[in-house]
Each structure stands twice: as C-alpha cells, then as structure tokens.
Image 1 (tube, rainbow, N blue to C red):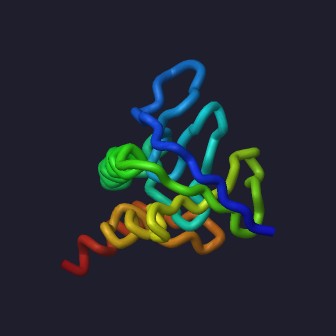
Image 2: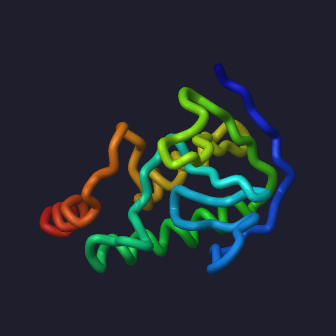
Length: 132
C-alpha cells in the first residue's frame, strides 16, 4: 500500500533537547509537526553515536544539507513498503518535483542507498581515503 501526503513548506532547524515538533535530527531523520520521520530510501552517517571522527564530520554535513533541502520548499512524503520501523518512526521517501531528496544526498556523497541494514561508515570512509 502506498500513499503520499503533500506538505506545505515548513521551517526546519537542527533539533535541540526537549520536545521536538519540526526539526532535523541527522541526515536521515527529522520531525515534522510532532511526527518522527526516517527517510526510507537512504542511510546517512550517524551524528549522535558516530564510530569515528570521519563519520561524525560526514554526518554533520549530511544533517546540514538535509536542513537546507527541507527548507527549500514544499515536498511530498510517500510510504513505500513498511509504514513504520521497529523504533516507531514513520518510514517515508521524501520527494520534491518527483525527485528523491534522499537520492540527492546519495548523489552528493552524503548518504548511501538503503540496503536493509546500516553500513559501518568508519570502514567505508577509511576505504575511500585509502583509494585516493
């Protein structure tokens, strides 16, 4: 079952401590009108429990970019597959003009496509540094 919800532009900032209404947690998770949303088609580096400094730095860049992308105007949230994850977050693909914002983060090197499990960003980033 798939449905889409057209959303008016919202004003996003980095989430602070305390109650969260509309803000960005990290590169693949945000709150919208009190609902926690996990971007379903990507995996971004962690920022709250990063495994290494390189993951933290890339996660911070992904988070900042997601804030910019979400603030750029109206977007659509679509359910494709499961509606929620094991943590109770809404799983949604975020699109603007038919293009996935998650896919844009992947194209910019700030996330990876979701493959059913999280990758070890420290290993991935060490490998990309070694191949340069």
